Length: 134
Image 1 (tube, rainbow, N blue to C red):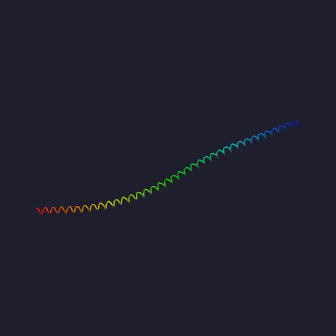
Image 2: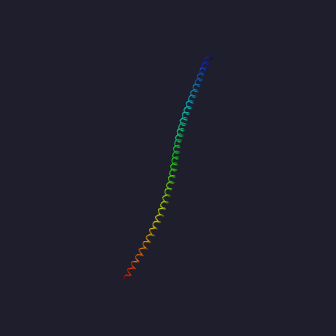
Image 3: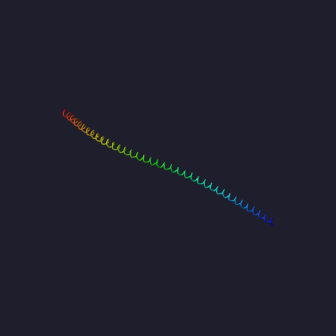
């Protein structure tokens, strides 16, 4: 009976050792599973951080392009205003030249009329003289 108790005790010890070993192995397996999950989550976090950094750089580039385009638009608008001012000045100068030319043409027309009138008078005098002689 002592032997039976000793065998039972040995069996119980072995069962306890086996159970403890199983528990330790299960705990170790769970620990490895958690570490693997943590590594996966860390990799996902790093990927997300990398993607966020890429998006941030892309947004910065887009913002720079917008600022550059705005500056270009402002410069073009300024150039348009300058060209409009030059065009206005050119039109005013053209109008001034046209008025001066019209005035000069008027003067020349008056001179031609006076000259024509004088020629006509001279021609009449010659004709009159010719008629008197005849």
